[in-house]
Amino acid sequence: MDGVLSQEEINALLNNPGGGSGVESVAPAGGSDDDLLTPEEKDAIGEIANISMGTAATTLFSLVNRKVEISTPVVSTATWDDVVKNYERPCVFIRIAYTVGLDGSNILVLKENDVKIITDLMMGGDGTNIDGELGELHLSAISEAMNQMMGSSATSLSSMLSKTIDISPPVADLIDLQESVDEGSIDEFLAGSFVKISFKMEIGDLVDSEIMQLYPVSFAKDMCKAIAKNMEMDAEEAQIGMSDASKKAPESAMSAASQGMQQTSQPQMGMGMMNPQMMNPQMMNPQMMNPQMMNPQMMNPQMNPMMYQQPVNVQAAQFTPFSGEFAAQFAKENIDLIMDVPMEVTVELGRTSKSISEILDFAPGTIIELNRIAGEPIDILVNGKFVAKGEVVVIEESFGVRITEIVK
Image 1 (cartoon, rainbow, N blue to C red):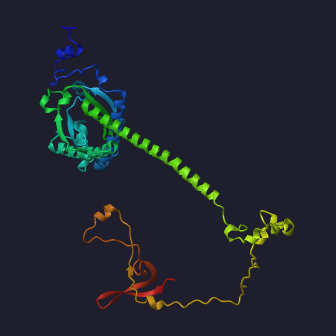
Image 2: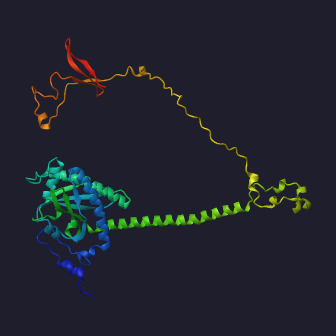
Image 3: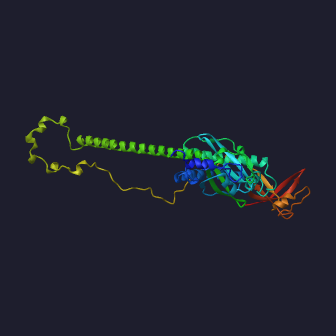
């Protein structure tokens, strides 16, 4: 009726800033937040996020050298007030924009303490050096980590959508949710309802926290449509392939049947059959076909099989007898062929075992005690094999070894 406001117009008039956070909370048109996405769309987004973050977790593991586990995502719709309630401390917003394949962006939200631990691990620490404020070094390191993580995630998304997906370098900002936030400092879609994907992230025994991924509703729906379109194309290709196969099957069957009929219709020229063109007309004389003049065995259609068997010479196998008088003759080894091969001779005075700490204490003048008594024969090794024993002698100004025993 004229002069009556609709529910959407009433909501627009009653809209006011949400909770003093500095960002307007826009009520979604057409119903509650849960009506923004259908259950099918939520399942599709959850599956996309599960595959993407699974790949990202593998990449993060290679960066921090710690076991990384990310739980199954929980998809819902939220507003800025919901984010403020869940993250009481200052947190890091990492914005990832898609440049190829998709048109939109998403935001990854990490807690300040988690960022400090990740960046400390990336720099070779043990994850406990988290004192002090979060600075530009931390933001730069976490941006690089997210660049590699979301890059691998984009690769997985490319295989799902069957098209190239690329992202721009992520931008990290530290935002204190307890203070009023200027609308110009955050993305526009955060002013209304958006899609929130929650994950539980564990990094060894250092991090047990929750991270969030925020999507614009329109961007999430575009991804769902792309997934659905890709699935429809795959189904059509599979159906076309089945249809082509079903068409080829009757044709191949008919072709095989026709070949079989042709082979059946043509008589095989075998033994016992004569070509009519080669037959003498006199042989067709009825008097010659008198049954009394023919051998009964010749009247048998199958003929006598012995008529077609060729004689085979079969005899018992004969083997050469073995006698003890036979002696194998072996060629004499020609060792002269390897006489010029060089061999390495090593003289070992003795051995000992030391720990790493004892080795680190070595200094000029340190005496190392060996496991051999003074005057005991030393070992002589050829190419690492123990072959003889000997004693140390001095030849002019050089040491030498006198062999005292050959080891057999």
